[in-house]
Image (cartoon, rainbow, N blue to C red; front, top):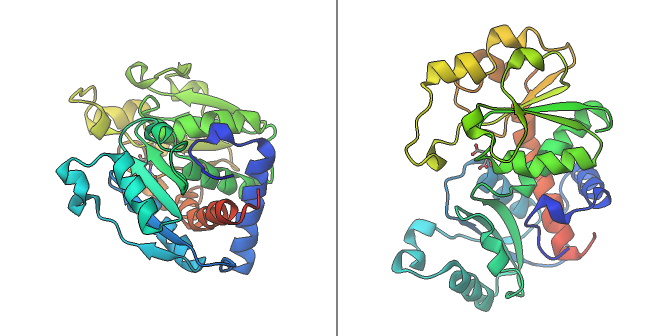
Length: 292
Ligand code: NCD
């Protein structure tokens, strides 16, 4: 694997191999890579978890991390993403982790560069390392994907997390149900009432309302969204005993999820964040050492 840009490029075997490697890292610690590699994290959209956990993984792998600040780079002088990538390649960077607002930004890059690209989120397109850490968290909990029902609920149309997880989960044997307001269903077949599905799911994966991608459209107040489409404390009482709650974060407390539920016993939200470091280390190691 030279690049990781989309979950669509991975077979089930490759996914399981990455999850197994992350599991080894979690149990035994992240081992330094056998060679010295340089990485830079190019984030053209805000990020806390993804950027910091990539950086933590890179440091634990013994990589040199070259700082890049999009807000102080030549991008502000009009340099294209392609020219920025070619520049960093010339400087000697081995791997770029890139987050960019344009869907599929990587398509114009992957054939034209010798360095490796890891997609840390493209617009409303894909976010493969988030999907892998979600899969890792589900596998840790249930040991398998076969026969599980996963409910993905929220602003699905604008969510690269939903798009990355949907096919992967189905290919791995889970049933996926989508719940969203009609305005935000996108290409997915969605239900729009919690009562129809809440008792059936093993995993509830909530999504953030992506205000920054709505171009001014306002359909709900925080309160009306929470009442109709959020996981309220009342609704959570109808979940099965074993059902877990996930969210890629950042979460809007009291909008898509009730404040109390975020740190409740059913929540795996901070475990997801922790798992992100091991998954990103597994992905970088796989790319740089050709394990998979
Ligand atoms: C997600 C993203 O950026 O796509 N966050 C993340 O990476 N943990 C989801 C979101 O921003 O809502």
